[in-house]
Length: 165
Image (cartoon, rainbow, N blue to C red; front, top):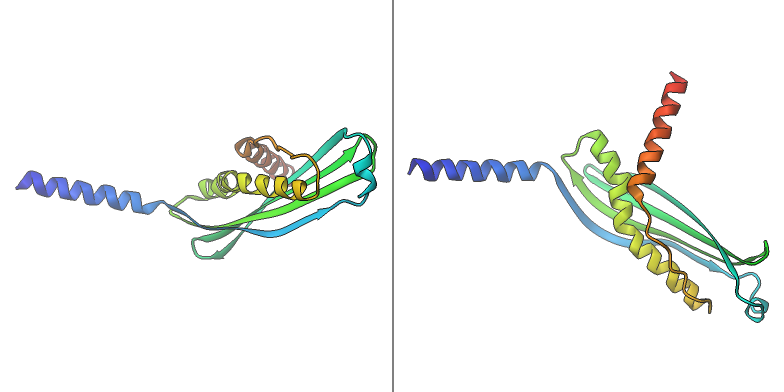
């Protein structure tokens, strides 16, 4: 009987410990989407030799206590051998995340790296779909290491903090 009470108390304690940190994905959605091909239709008559420039950015905001919106912005600008733009495909892929029980550093990492990592495959698919609908070959974007990008941003932030102090 005593063992049973101890086991129940241990299970309750473990469950309470697990309830302290909570993470759940509420929704993933496209916030903004854009495609333009300023040289169409003449671009389809030239040889295809694409040069791709990818811009990536993230931002987040708190919607209410424990609920955050994270927005991953991708912009692919493609030129065809010269400096003239063949097409631009842009997407703002967003997600609403319920996050509780994290310290400040862990929360920054979650919002700055973990959440964008979840959103990236959706953004990549949206860009690829836009490019195909524009009648161009698929644009297969490589995976992005958001942890490394976050670490670089934190390092820059720390250096800027030292310079202003």
